[in-house]
Amino acid sequence: MSPSSRAISCKGLSKVYTISHQSAQRGTLGQALVDWLKNPLRGKNNESFWALRDVEFDIEIGQVVGIIGRNGAGKSTLLKILSRITLPTAGQIELFGRVGSLLEVGTGFHPELTGRENIYLNGSILGMRRKEINRQFDAIVDFSGVEKFLDTPVKRYSSGMYVRLAFAVAAHLNPEILVVDEVLAVGDAQFQAKCLGKMKDVATSGRTVLFVSHNMAAIQSLCGKALRMQAGKVAGFGDVNPQIESYLQDINRHKNETGFKPRQLTPTLSLDLLSFSPNPVASGESLTFNLELSSSGPTQATEIAILIFSQLGTRVAIIDLRSNRHEYRFDAGRPLKLRGKVCSLPFVEGDYAVGLYLNCGDMRGDVLDLTTLSVTGRLPVPEIPPYSPNDRGFMDLSYEFDLI
Image 1: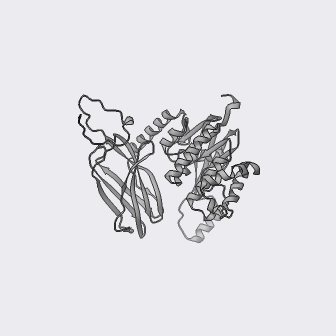
Image 2: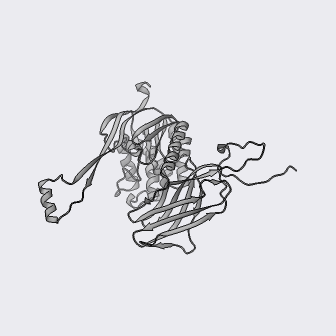
Image 3: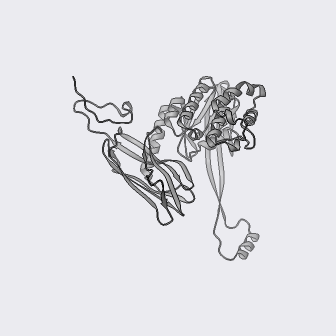
């Protein structure tokens, strides 16, 4: 790759964080104070955590690259360094052009300023002149759909309004490099589709796009290349389909090794069990499920749904567990336990990712990649080889037909 064709170049990029652990000390408060005065560092155990280590890659001008990897792989840290929000511990990075980034809802917005003022503020941060912002202003407002609230301080915006305006600014102010994190998940399905369409327009205009997402279908649709991260290192970089395949194999291997583990969702709420039986289940057969939540204090759940996704991240079904009693109540020492039955699961064979949607106490939103539901195929019709699972979509319908 010639230097003139590069948009981004990373060499030996590393980022380390220091985590301090305070060891427990016995004795009176006075004794602890005396000990501290004698040795302020006593009792502290510092641990180094490498979020990135020796990351190297080059991205050409006009490439659309998906960054994929499990949670904790280093994706967000990499984007923060690329966006100059944080500095690397070691290594160097070269950026050939202005960078527009959308990493968190409202990043770069001043809460006391209006939507109109924040458009100009963000444009200035990106290095745009006022005349350039003026040319795109109407398109930004139209795309975001916040025209009625343009002169309202953004601190009064909902999270959806925030992300619509933030994306519109980043996408319309013509940075040579556009960096987008998973924040598109905040918007509704219609807005997500609109954003992906805009990103395709940006990509075809010759600008460089880096896109982080757990939705492999979106990565596959938008990106020509994928950078696969694992434990802070580059595990692979190349054509998108082979990298997605390797990523999914790693996800399945990890789930098979670890199985379901209880998860602390919030300081007060934990998920203790989410299981299916049988698992694997034959396509079209019934199965039971168990869900257990516990809380450290009085809690009510108004919405609970089990979410089922394809391996590419497309939601294929939900199990709606709302009750006609309107809410579930549970307390410390008295967990919420739900058991149910899916009468028929007509899925094409394969592995499906399972998550939850919860509106429960101080938790409202999706919790993804909790476990895997495996489906095996039905017996094929004799002498007729079945189509491959990729050719058959998601549903394995039961049907009959006759020649008339």
